[in-house]
Amino acid sequence: MNNKEYTTKQEQLARFAKALGHPARVAIMEFLIKQDNCFFGDIHEVLPIAKATVSQHLKELKDAGLIQGEIETPKVKYCINRENWKIASMLFNEFFGQCVCKKESCCG
Image (tube, rainbow, N blue to C red; front, side, top):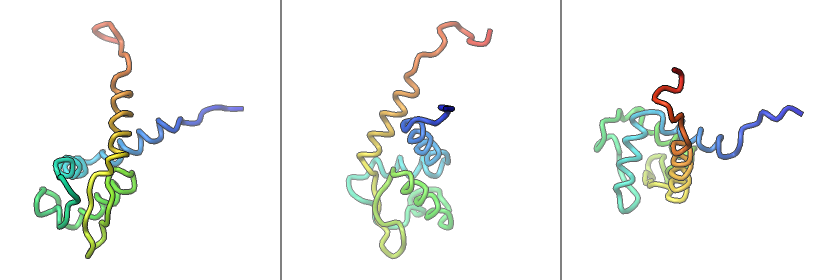
């Protein structure tokens, strides 16, 4: 049997990373993290994001589980999915906290 499957953690980390792979989505997340409640309204009015692409970015974040709420007009309200945000934080911390080469240059 060929065991070349990715782990659940690897797949989840990749999904979160893909969702955060655009500066507009990072800006949306940073904005929502600072909110006390769900955000109501058009995020393009508070961030430098084109109105035409806002729903696409929100959909990507929602599909990845990083935000929750209603992203389709007229019921626009959304916020951070705190449970998944904690999972993403843990996965990224584990990933970036892995030991790296102790030499000055790993390839040298």
